[in-house]
Image 1 (tube, rainbow, N blue to C red):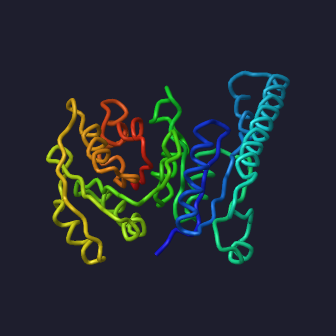
Image 2 (image 1 turned 30 degrees about the horizontal axis):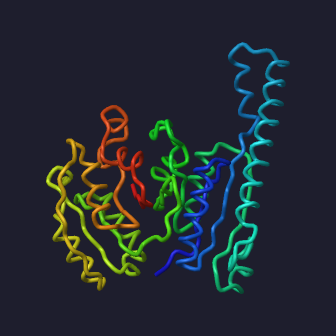
Length: 292
């Protein structure tokens, strides 16, 4: 069991650079391929503004400006990718499986295409074992991160959220956040390769986090069937925040990967009231693997 093909929706920000480094760490662990995808804004999406009372000349001017800005951003992202890949040891640039198969280490490729980012990323993610996404920018509303939520809700694939600063390693000490839901079960199944590879695994549970479904002892027994030994560790909310308690328990364990289900409550409820998923997305300092 291994991850062989990773997708990275790439932006030209510091968070994008940290995500690139995080994806490469994962690729080194599995001898995998990372495909960096930049989705340019399609200027034709401006055309529907004709129905808003804008003149043809105004729409053409807006389309030209959109095309120009989109091209400049794509150039910056490409430059980021090329700068990152210069001098990387043991990494090969490849764009097809035949070339990748001839190498022993990880491979990288880059592509820029036009379209609606959430649609393109969600659809393309279905062809990959896992997607790696940048950490939301400081001050950005996590619930508006289009690529992240498109993959979570519309790809059927796990998402690895990179931290703001790339870690030295991933998956040596893994925490499983368990609350009995279908989402947490999907996260465990998606993380099995990491769990097999880890030197230590903890199952984090809490009465305040538990939903209707099997208790932590049930997933512990499941993992034993997979020859994975995991310790059950209950945690308590911190300052009444379940997410803070979860991250605190992972930090106490020295985890370098947390795997969990996303949005056991509705996304709208978490948008309005907050929630464990939202807190973890905003505050995690280690890579987090999520499934919906």
